[in-house]
Image 1 (cartoon, rainbow, N blue to C red):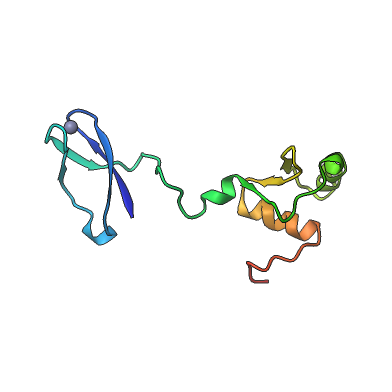
Image 2: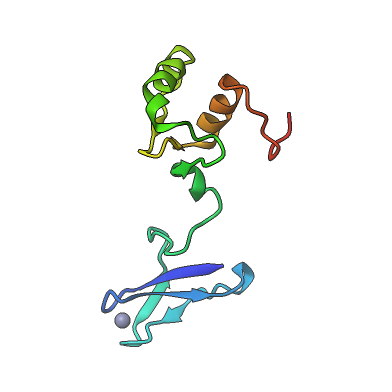
Length: 114
Ligand SMILES: [Zn+2]
């Protein structure tokens, strides 16, 4: 895991990789040597598991750009409000939205049970 740290003295922020069990309780700032701690509020600089579903453009379920209005209409009748890129790729903002889209459009999801 990569953990973000923040210094209480100078506000310096940095990241350090270590095992969760080896996360130090007290760590000192590499710049001013003041006490620092794990910055729970920091956003990770590297993608984390699940991030892909907050903005997931599907290539395999893309539609022809000319047919986007028709697909948007179809989506609305199925309770979906999915955006499409100019190239016709549907953009999912959550995993559940993608699953509902897969079912509504009759696709088979081979990366999922049931
Ligand atoms: Zn510092």
